[in-house]
Amino acid sequence: MAVLSTPRSAVQLAGKGQPVREHLFRIALISSLAIAFIFLAALLTYVLVEGWPRLDSRLWENMPSIRDPEIAGAQSAITGTLWVISLTALFTIPTGIAAAIYLEEYADKSRWWNRVIELNIQNLASVPSIVYGILGLGIIARALALGFSVITASITLGLLVLPVVIIASREAIRAVPPSIREGSLALGATQWQTISRQVLPAAIPGIATGSILALSRAIGEAAPLLMLGAVSFIRFNPDGVFASYTVLPIQIFNWISQSREGFHYLAAAAIVILLAILLLMNSAAIWLRNRYQKRW
Image (cartoon, rainbow, N blue to C red; front, side, top):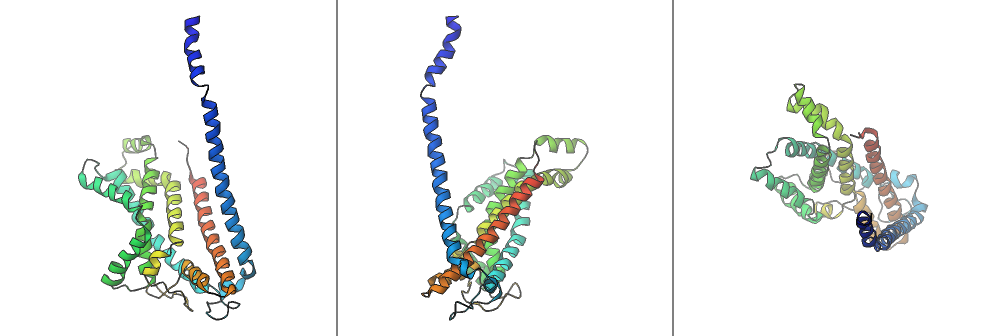
């Protein structure tokens, strides 16, 4: 009996100090989370209080003004933001999903060029956004002669978030159990029929979530758009993909740079609008994930 109880006793003795370390580690994690939430709540409260006097219809109905903050609005910036992010989604999501399908379902992992592609996609996801702005300025705006237009900004932001969409889509496709593919192929379906009718529908939650979160990053970018001629003062809405434009981050930066206090209130109100758009996008991602999620 003593021999049988020895292993259990040894485990108990070895784990005596473990609960203390686990408790301290848990306290550290909870403290870090609480500090992050406190700072976030303080920032949101400050922005909401500062922008509350200008959170009215003038903000989205009026055009910007460089003289009178009381009549100034952000209609051109809001419209430009919607134009740019819509075209970015149009360019990025189909391309990212197609690349993920190729890398996960068709690419031969033993080929060196496929390994190079995967390595470059992972590296591109960490490249600073200003580098994409320089790339867009040199190649898209000048070499391709698209100018400082909505389509130039959209393509550049699409390149910025494309690696994130590819990585998220690959993870979603990879999460589909191999038995789904094997069962479909065993019933006589082709590889493309298996992918289009079984794999992709099952991967929709992860793909949609990753794509919307990637677009949420793009909508808040200002550095690459400064390189691409996003003008801070425009009193008209874009009327096409080749039109001049401005976006909310650029307009916010312009108002914060002003010396008059009224423009600072405007900037805070515009930040609230931008956060509301981001919240709607993230809420759509959560809804899509919960709506179509499957448990295997």
